[in-house]
Length: 413
Image (tube, rainbow, N blue to C red; front, side, top):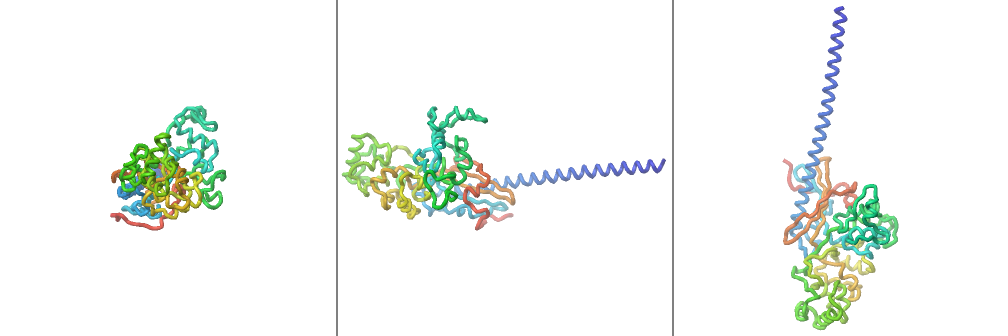
C-alpha cells in the first residue's frame, strides 16, 4: 500500500514537472516570438527613420536648386548616384534618387494624341480622359459612374486630376500589367529600340505632378504676348517688324491661346523664334503644368510627342544638360518657325517639382517611400508622400538589388 502511494506521488510529481516544463517552454516560445516581433517592429521603425533622414538630405540639396534652369550639374542630380549609393547613418542606411518631374509626361494634361503613343487601347484612352474630366457624359468607349458603380466593389469616377500614378489602376481597362510591364503590342510607337520586351513600362514615363515657374532663365517675368506693346517687345529683344506682326495678328484674330500659335505669325524668323521661347508667354499664370524639360527628358518620353522626328529627338539628347535657355531649341536641326508651332508648348527648361525615391534599411528590415517635393524661393517642401504599391520598388525604379558604393554620414556610437 505504501509502495502504491509512493508510486502515485512520484507520478503526480512527474506529471506536474512535465506540465510546468510545457508551460515554461510555451511561455519561452511566446516570449521569444514576442521579442523577435518587437525587435522587427523597432528595426522597421528605424528603417523608416533612415528613409526620413534620406528625405531630409534630399531636401537640403533641392533647396539649392535653380528652378528656372534645371541642370544636370546641380548637386541634387548626382545625389545618391540614382540610388546606387548607400549612406550610413549610425547603424541604419538609406538610398536616395531625385528626379525632376518635368522629365515625365503629366497624366493630368496629356492629350489624346500623345496618349496614343503609349500603345494604349481606345478604351483605356477614353476611360483615362473620362476619369479626370468634369463632364458626366462618358466618351464612346470611356466610363463614368454608371460603369464604376456596377462593379463588385463600387466607387465613383474622380472627375478631377490624378493624385498618384497608381490611381490609374482604378480606371477602366488598366491593370498592374498595363502600368508596370512593357506593352503587349506596339500598335502605336516603339518608344525604345529593340523588341517589345525592351519597351519601357508606362509607369516609368508618367507623373501626376510637374510644374515650372513661368519665368525666364534669369528669373525675371516672361513677357505676355497677348498684352505687350510694341515698345515692350522691342525693348525685350524682338525685331520691330516681328513685334508689329504679333500685334496685328492678335488684333485681327484674337488673343493667342497657345505659344505655338505665335509661330504662325507671318514673317517670323529663327531669331524671333529664339526670343519667343526665351522670354515669351501667352498666359498670366505664375506656374505652368505639364511641360517637358529639354535638359532632362528621356528619349522614350520625347518619342511620345506626336510627329517629332528622330533627328529632332537626337538633337535634343545630344545637347542635354547644357541648355541655358529654352530658345536654344531653335538652334537644333529640324526645328524651325513652322515645326515650333507644333512643339513649343511641350517644352520648358526649369522645374519646380521633384520626385524623391527612398529606401531606408536597418539590418534586414527596410522600407520604401516616394515623396513629391516643390521648391520655391530656396525652400523645399513635401507636398505628397506615399508608399509604392508594387512588390519590388527597386526593380520598377531600375535600381540594382545591392548598392555599388557606400558613404558614411554618421558613425555608430
